[in-house]
Each structure stands twice: as C-alpha cells, then as structure tokens.
Length: 106
Image (cartoon, rainbow, N blue to C red; front, side):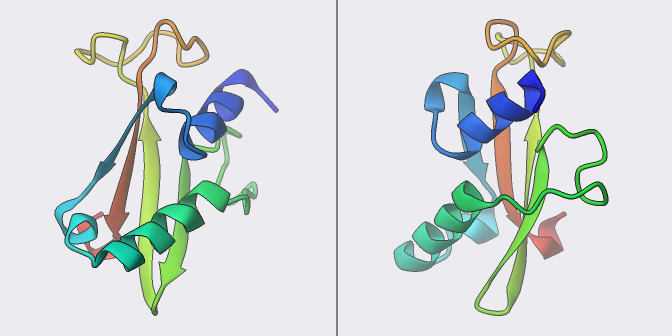
C-alpha cells in the first residue's frame, strides 16, 4: 500500500492529526444514532477495487444506510488549507479533508 492510501486510511479511521471530517448539511441533519452508524461504516470501509480506487489512494467510497447511498471523498489541501498540496504523501505538507455526503449532494 502506498503512503497516500495509508494516510487516507488513518484519517478515515479516526486520526484527526492528519486532517478533518466535513459533514454536509444532509448528513449533519441525520439523527445522532444514524449519523454515528454512518460514520462507523465509513471508518470500517475496506472494499477498495480497481474500479472504485483506480489510483490506489483510498480516497473515495460509498456506503449505504437505511436504503440511502452516501459517498465520502478525501481532498488534499496544503497544510495552511489555502491551495492543493504539492505532496499528498507528506503529512507535514498536507492537511486532509474527508467530506461525507448523501449521494444527492454529489
């Protein structure tokens, strides 16, 4: 597994030192128990395939909760959050942002 995928997995699984999670309005408005179940599914996601992860970066996925599809994606801004990182494999140069959204918000 490459360094970018490892760092993305760490953020997705809860390592907030590497970045932050952003929940869209629709996800934020879910009842607390549903939101917690959705976050847990994203944290446990491991169904990466060449079709859904063509660059082997573990930066996108989809999960289903109560018949609704949700997407998550990871972006790579620089450490100051002002521009795209020039080196997403460096935790010092990159502050990752995982966005969790309902499929209708994509």
